[in-house]
Length: 118
Length: 114
Image (tube, rainbow over all chains, first blue to last red; front, side):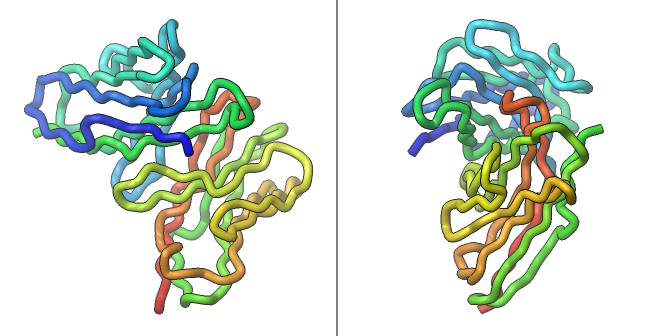
C-alpha cells in the first residue's frame, strides 16, 4: 500500500525558533500534498494545499508567513513553523494524493508530528 | 459555511454487537464522502469512500456506509464489532469537486467492551 512518512514524529523547541517538518510519499508520486493541524481531542483542520513546483495555497485564517510550505519534488513537502510560539503547539498531519494510475486521487496520511513549543 | 457533523463524540459497544456511526454534512452539490480511522501512532487510514453510483459502499475491515442525499448523511456501519476496532473515526467531505481538500467531522471515539 501507499506509505506517507513524516519526520520528525515529535519535536520540542523553544519559543522563537523555527521548526521544519518533512512529509514524504515513499512509494508513489504526489503532485498535491495537504497539511492539517489537529488539536487535542478535536478534528483535523486543513491548513494549506501544497502543489509541486508552485506556491502553496492557504486556507482562510492561516498565516502563510508563519507556516512556510515548500513542495520541492513529487515525493517531498516541508512545513516550516517560523518563530514558533506556545500557541503553535499541536499535532501536524500531512497527506499526499496519488497523481495517477488506478488509485488516482486517493489521499494517504502521514502519522503526524507532535510539536511542543516551550 | 460548509461543515461536517459527527453527533456522537464517544460510543461504547460490546464486542460482537453492531455499530453505526453517524455523519451529517451541510448541503453541497455532489459531495465526495470519506470515512477514516485513526489509531494511536498511526496515520489516518481510509475505510471507504463515496463518489457516485451505488449509495451503499463497502470498505475495508468489514465496514460499510450508506449515502442518503435526502438526509445529507453518510453513516458508517459494521454488523459485528471486534476489539481491534477501538479507535477514532472521522467522517470527511470534499465539497470542492474532488480537489482533495477535506473538511473533517469532530470524530467519534469508539470503545469496545469485551
